[in-house]
Every structure is written in structure tokens, then in C-alpha cells.
Image (tube, rainbow, N blue to C red; front, side, top):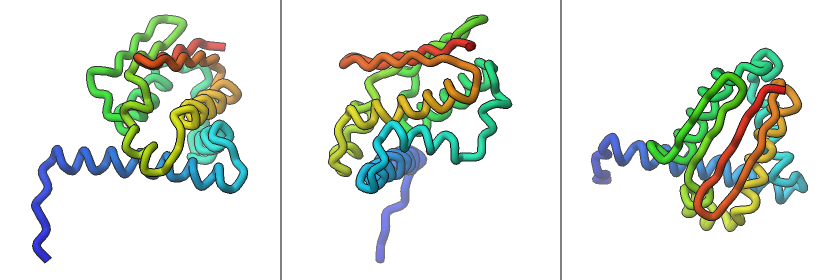
Length: 149
């Protein structure tokens, strides 16, 4: 079998596709088993072995964790802007569903389910990491604002 050599860019694109596929495919399976997308996101955050209570109110660490998550999962690059001040972190990004359109179509999942999945992620932190998160999903981009308490 004669397979092509993959460039670093090819590998990055494939990793991004596989990461999204695992996340969205897992969500589809969970929904098929009666677990809604938000609950799946919540449980995913709780099961991954991060002691969220230990990060209680640590906005810098939470910003780093989710900056990496959004970059690795959606590949936003410069389209992801993170601003941190003494009391809050704000993530401004392109619409999640535009970055994951191929995998949403492949798994036949609606954008609303991806929004709910993200609500579940942030609910886990709200309940366990001493923060409050506000999510705004708009057609031209999404914003997550995280505050202590």
C-alpha cells in the first residue's frame, strides 16, 4: 500500500477533525442512551479527573485550561481572543458550529446540541470551581464570560 506522507499541517488538521469527532460522536451516543447534551458535557468535565474545587476561583488557570480546549478542539487560532482582568475572563470566538460544521454534519447533530454540551462544561465549573459563567451564542460568534463566585 502506498500511503502519502503527511505534513505537519495535514496532521494538525486530522487531529482537529478526530478531536471534534470524538467529542460530537460521544455526545451523539450519550443522547441515544438518554443523556442530553448538557448532561453529557457536565459529566465529561466531572469524569476527567480534574479537581475543579482545587481551582476554586483561579481565573488564570481556568483561562489556560479552556484556551487550550478551544484551540485544540476548534482550531480558532487568532480568532479566539481571551481577556483577563482581576475579576473575570472573557473568551470571544467564532461560532463553535462553524468550526465543527463537518463533524456536526457527519454525526447529524444540530448546533444547539454543541451549545448545550458547552453549557454542561461550564455548569460543572460553576457548581465546583467557584465561578459563574455566562454563555452567549450568536450567529457571528460566541462569548463566554467567567467571574469568581
